Length: 428
Image (cartoon, rainbow, N blue to C red):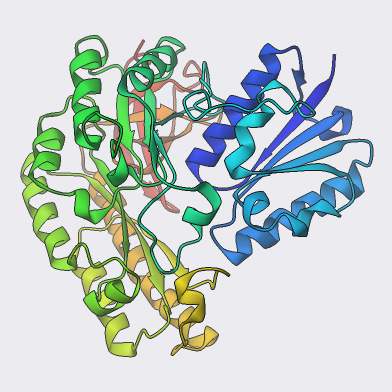
């Protein structure tokens, strides 16, 4: 029986796709192994969202080729789509399959079976982590000036609601207590598909699943566009029995001028502040994360300070802060930089310092709550709360296996982690 090893870098969607391919291979008789030394083939699915991601991918492929010379490397993912020439001649690489053709690998590493778009939504029956990813959308048709994703993944495509619901039921029945609803651009869900938008999909999941799963499982929304935060979103979030009290937003900048140069002028930063204030009436405590990009071409010090001011005003509980990374083939690649690399790093450092202080303050607030619901992630009792706070169970957790949902009493926080004690047995 041919053994294969799986390596994945990048976003939740990339992880989900790679896992679906691995399960397809297993169904066809291949054996998965965690040890690349015993694998005949390795499926390496890579990211291209930043220059660093591509560099990390090359390093991984080179290392595997050097350390496991008997293992054939099949490289796929966004990096393989956009920069195939950087991988073809690396030691051990036998095949490079771009992201748009990834589904052709469904029958195995050497087969070339063309699949139509509907068939390309390979099903998941389980997941390799404590929280399962529910993939509902792929691609992006917007074209932000800094983003390479439209080149790597193509135009937006939406998974039919019936397929999404069926997969959600499979994963819940398989024992998962949290599903992360993910896509490349969830604001594009439903476009041209003959069905509703993203919030209509969430209402469908609520209607079909809440009676059986409320209190036993939850849905976590992956990264959202700020433009999605409208009255329809507020109504769903305020009434949902399944949605985690946590949002992650693709903010990028607090300056309207920078957003315009990014081709993201479809929302105004102040609207996000107003939405969060309204949401707080339904969710007194909620996690709020953001992606923030500094040093974008043309960004002045005063425009950066607008981003700092927005981060200060928002009830952020964490943030992913990135200095701008030039991506070949994007509109921004031809724009003149105004911030030097050192200035961009300095701005990122200042923004991280601010958002880290907010994260610590939020953990202290969580420590005063009567209860949190934790998805256990490993045998050490580490996990994540409904608010997306990192947690660690302090006692009595040995009976709680990974994927378990444990109700717990907060005890305090230490080193960026909420400490908690279990209340009763894990939720079944």
